[in-house]
Length: 186
Image (cartoon, rainbow, N blue to C red; front, side, top):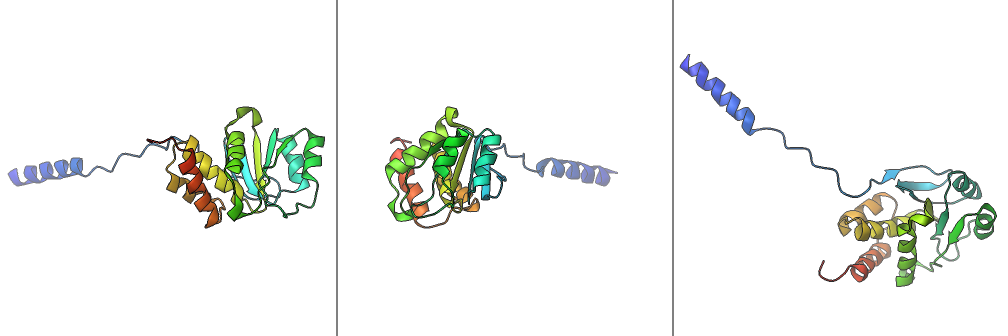
């Protein structure tokens, strides 16, 4: 009987020692979700911000029906959408912002400032961010996450890669902009 009691005490104490770890709390930043937006590709959504690639005229009409207030066109110069985005946005009452991106290796501080101002301004949302592939939108989204949502930069870059950001110059640009825009001492 003593042996059985000892075994039961040992089993009970072992169970107490080997409890599964507590569930980790969710991160403090808003969740990024895969989404859809008409014919666009690589679409992700976070709150009232969508970003993706391959914007069509029908997608702009859908944006109006969804109540989108602003479109941020992050296409590189020379990329032809096949329709007049400026005219269409004007006709539909959607504000269009175009920071005139030239090429991946020619991005400027001003490009980042324009994109971040739009991501941050609640009066400009819902916001649709578009480029040819979704890569440029994911790039600026990563910068916004790192700066405004306290997401570690490497985690923000990984999330952006999963959302379609091409590696290389875009990652280097995000790292440089994060360094430029992060207050010293943090």
